[in-house]
Image (spheres, rainbow, N blue to C red):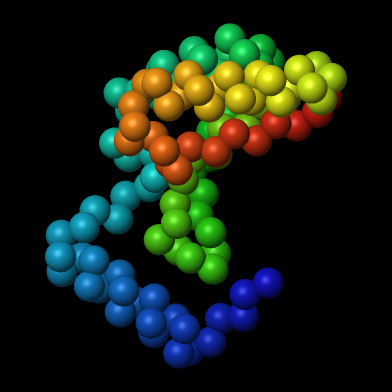
Length: 110
């Protein structure tokens, strides 16, 4: 667990102010992905039929590390779920090289 201090918060504010001054967009990780999200959803639902959700997330220790978590359920055995996960990554990479590191797949066994 990260303990926030006045100094660490001041550093984060400084970083955000620098980014704003430089014109860096501070929108959610899903911003700029809208053109691709219908394809991402289609691929995900083909490989993992069932509940689907996506959420903007960030690493609390590295607030600039933002990404979209795609959450699915799998009723398959572990080997098949891993095979489908690898296929998902392959197909997502084929959509756009810009997606690297911006999407994360979370599979819950069901």
